[in-house]
Image (cartoon, rainbow, N blue to C red):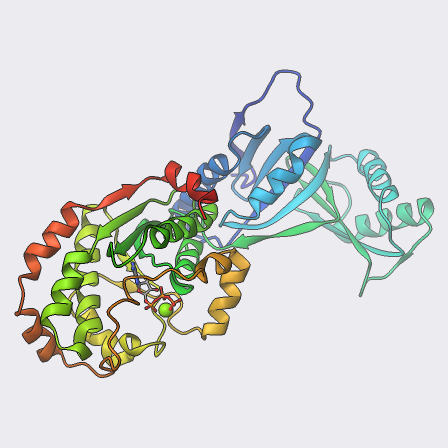
Length: 411
Ligand code: ATP
Ligand code: MG
């Protein structure tokens, strides 16, 4: 069977007779070679792209190896901008399409190169359609000759100013000189869902971005402790979610009222163990709520050794309360590497706003670096945390996707 066969043609917002004279194609990101996975990958990518391009004017078609988007000059730039925020796309190519006819290809190449500024060039032909009468090499040489006759320039196969790409495929011949990098990764959703512990810090939005990159759909859980933490702190987290949402389109933020648990810990637990016990409580709540929301894993922004609660010993003792896998995408990154990523994804400026988080209130002067599990269990017997946890979970407030986007201008 022809692997380039069109599976389906999907048209959105297509007006009869409207001019659609711009063409883009998308090369897929990291694809599993398994046939069923490929189908699912494409289906989810298509859904994510439709979601991302909402409100724009375009028509989309796809094959098992790429997607084509037709649009007009007015929408082209915005479509490309939005596609650069979609995971699962290796690259975005603005191209021209002609029939598999030597003369037509030649004419189009002349038209394209006449609009470009360059001194040296090279032609690269890929011929997946073997019924075309010339080999790739022969055709590259032939087109090279055509360009030299029409433009004042020379060939440089090693370091050319432009590469004229010609792809001769079953569905037509595609000519392009520019390829824009996509984000790569897997389309969000191919791996099912995870629960991101989202704070107002630098690390967790980056962790969320990295999990999305591997195809994990996310919901977010934020622990707040009013009145010890402010409304600004909460708005900051929702604002961060709205930025990360550019790469998901599907985020929700669940807000856990954590005050009574924090106060109970503060009252009953020795200073040095406050943070350890608090994080064990967070994990317990996250695990239970994740199950309710069909999330398979917990995702957070912990980084080995960053603070007392993130030494390996602390992680073991804290992680002990859950059997759910905890994905820590930034576990092995330096803080500077995490900051670089947060600058790249646009969360840094918001993350550094100075509002106190529940982890930064009640911070003991000397938190334990090597906590002991037995001690945690003993201290947790000092108050009825089960009732408090249930109460927290029953009173979670959910901010849905639409509302998140409206928070954009709040801070
Ligand atoms: P920073 O960038 O300052 O380190 P942080 O959010 O990473 O901020 P940590 O104390 O290092 O703060 O917390 C480790 C992880 O625990 C966070 O990355 C986040 O996943 C989770 N976490 C911390 N506080 C909260 C909170 N209030 N709500 C939800 N998750 C939290
Ligand atoms: Mg951190």
